[in-house]
Image (cartoon, rainbow, N blue to C red; front, side):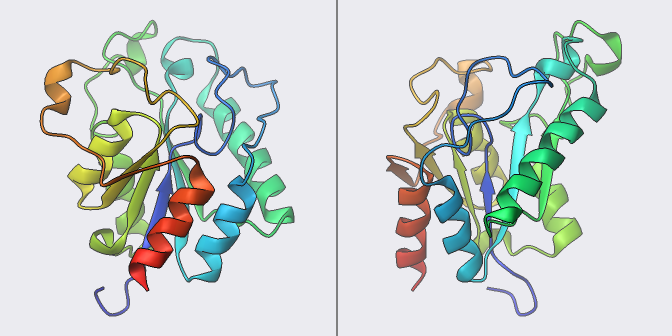
Amino acid sequence: MVLGRRPAFFLDRDGVLVEDPGTVLPTQTLELLPGAIEAIRLARAAGRLVFVVTNQTIVARGIATEDEVRSVHANLGQRLAREGAMVEAFYFCPHHPGATLAAYRTECSCRKPRPGMLLDAAREWDVDLAASVMVGDRLSDVAAGKRAGCRAGLVTTGQHNAPPIESPDAYVGVEPDFVAHDLLSAVRRELEVDL
């Protein structure tokens, strides 16, 4: 670890931190997955920063605005904080190359499997990426973590068996460093590895 920098856990949202019902509308309450609060508490107690990094094509499709997604994240962050499970920041990508709304139709650097959200967090929070871990439920999460220079794990609580969201070419050679049943198992495993 580089002196002065801190390691982090980067968490995908749907299927990792909260239930993945498919499309999440801005008026819906996100249901936390079992063990998610304890996982964040453990990470924080071990001196890790915690970030949520999530693709939100709901914006690109015109179903919600960026402000509505921010509001959902603010509410989720407050719920977690009340339980002693503080998240430093929520990052989301509103873009999609086939977006319904032209303003969001782009090949951006933030949409996972690209690492832009992780790199932004690392820059803004002085994160040691080499000592950090990305935890997701899709290969796109794993690829983003690897491309940012992190370890990357896959949990089986979400869409881990779903087909890739990008061209299969985007995942050539992409393998998770570990597979865990859920976020709590992933965090426990990584903290043991780090001891």
